[in-house]
Structure formats: structure tokens, C-alpha cells
Amino acid sequence: MKLIAYVESGLQENIKIRIAISLKILLQKSKLLTKDEKDLVGNSYNTIALNAGIRKATVTDIFNAKSSPNATTLFLIIEAMGHKLNDFSKIYDSLRDREIQDFKKKKTSQS
Image (tube, rainbow, N blue to C red; front, side, top):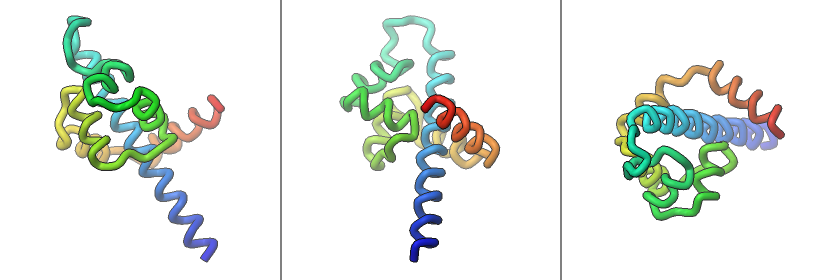
């Protein structure tokens, strides 16, 4: 039973990381598309939170893989950045194990 719980925990952690990486890539794309600072497209955690109607801390935790978003929150964040779920899923599906490992290393070194 302990092995199953360990494997499930690892899978959940990888999902949180894949979501975080995918959202960070979308955020970078949003920043490139946003020329005018008054634009309503979410190009910062604060703007995303305001546009999505959720707490900035929630956005920050999701982008840093500290928590898993529920589906509604994930959709709100994606839309707040001016993207569609399809944009997110393409990035999520294209991520490689190496990118997940790099994120983990970076996260560990920042702790």
C-alpha cells in the first residue's frame, strides 16, 4: 500500500508541475502579445487574478506547482491570459520528462 501511495503522490506532483510549466509558457506568450500595459490580457499573476476573479495567492501557488487547481480555476486562469483550453492542452501534451526534471531542480534550488 505504501508503494501505491508513493507512486500516486509522484504522479500528482508531476501533474502539478506540468500544469505550472504549461501556464508559464502561456504567460510568456501573453506577455509577447501584450504591447499596451492597459491591455486586459493577463500578463502578470496579479492581472490574471483580477481578470479571473480569484486570489493572487491562488494563482501564484498554481504557477509554482504548490497546489493543483480545480478545473474551473484552471479554465479561469487560461481565459484570463487570453488563451483557450486547446492552447493549454497542446503545451501540456508536448512537455517532456526533461522539462519536468528541470522544473523540479529549479524549485528545489529556490527552497
